Image 1: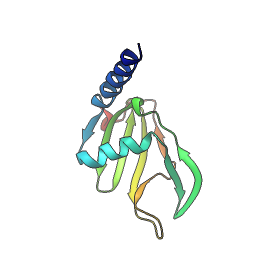
Image 2 (image 1 turned 45 degrees about the horizontal axis):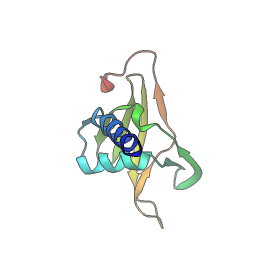
Image 3 (image 1 turned 135 degrees about the horizontal axis):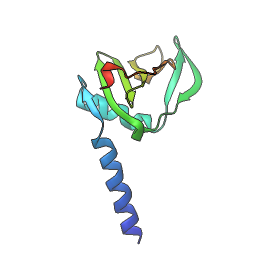
Length: 112
């Protein structure tokens, strides 16, 4: 029974990641972003860590778009989260967010 449960969880996890569409995204960067999302992305205000984290369900992400060090994560077609890869003084380089989220009643063209 334990083997079946482990197999089922592994199978469902791989299907979830397989459904995410990457656009203009370096494969390694997007995979790293997805893995860090599971622990939450720290929210910064300028160069200061607010102590809060952006908790986003990885399985809800439908598309990731990359432009340089900036990433847009589509949740469905009506919500976009913005995440940046930044190197802040005296800290290691990492994915951060300023907490910005864009929501629309209509679909964002970038998320289609």
